[in-house]
Length: 493
Ligand code: ADP
Ligand code: LRH
Image: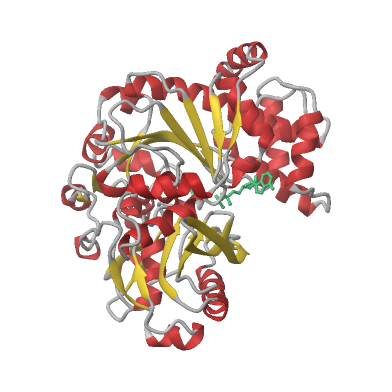
């Protein structure tokens, strides 16, 4: 077709894709151009991202798009949070790119709190405490004397890194920078005080840019390889979760009293509300919620929940035994399995980066006084029920934090295709669940590019477009009683 397309490069922790979005008869139409795996690589004792492979796949996607569409109006990249790339003053990467599950951060939070007390870090950043936060990665790098940090001249988050590869220009985008735990959520600029107290090299942190503006154009070396000559790169909300939240199909923006929440469901489940202001208070610290940066100065008050990671890793583990099954079959077997045979807390430390997920679950069952799972169905079901039970607990915390009842839970992302999980969520939480869009992240990325080129005027307008363009499915709560009992048992795990 002749309508100009915008290309969203969307990199999740489990897969990446290049998606073309355009306006066709007042609808946003998405077309998948290229999808590829994103598998970490172990080198010596550490876990890295295969950024060279990702860049090759991105270029492949861009080239395919250039062949497929007449006019590419712009490109923008969003990725998972917290990870970073360092570059030197000759514009070379200073070292390999670590995965947030890399073990160098074990114990790094405690090391960091010895330098700046926990409460002061929270006051300065409003962020939840997770070992994988950029801050603890950098503290580990600093205290262990990583040379790549010593020779660094520039710090880029993953989206900024790919934008740099595309344009040759360095930038730091606000929503993803907000996941570092080094950003002041009130000013949306670096907390220079934290940076200096942790003795991190201040010069590598350049000023932060808000999404929606043009960074540059595809540089000639990349244009030659992809056919995208002179195409603008528009910075979207480069944190995938921030882009996903933009695409929640609602009719308001950062409401005073939010009556809806979202679960961005993929490798992680990010559950929270969109607010106009950060809520940095004692209750938020106690419940370990985070105030991440959203579009147009909004706040994503949310909690990271261990997501479909366990479900994905069960599949990987069965793959090694030549016994992997498709998502559909996994969901069918979970549906057929007996409820509450195995309770799994998705946020148990044992599941962060086990060598083999099935082994980890079997030993967890032993440790928590439960029967070892007797079938794949029990494993699958346990992983999904555990998520629904975490959502239920998290909803309660969220309502306490925002001070009102939340009526509707929007599930977006790859996990919104899991209808069993959607129904379990409705039942466990006793709330209406609205599932979709599946490619919320790409849609949110593209919406911001369309705002950048003037095709869309506002977030409310973008959401209107998204609501009318993508189908959603509603799940009504039923059968709550069994979940009450399970929730009690879950608390004592
Ligand atoms: P990420 O961005 O973290 O890589 P995605 O949003 O791509 O994650 O979601 C991936 C997850 O979506 C998978 O772990 C899988 O559980 C789920 N999923 C993907 N396709 C289906 C499907 N057809 N049915 C059920 N679940 C699915
Ligand atoms: C989801 C996500 C999440 C981060 C995690 C590292 O993809 O961006 O918001 O906390 O990855």
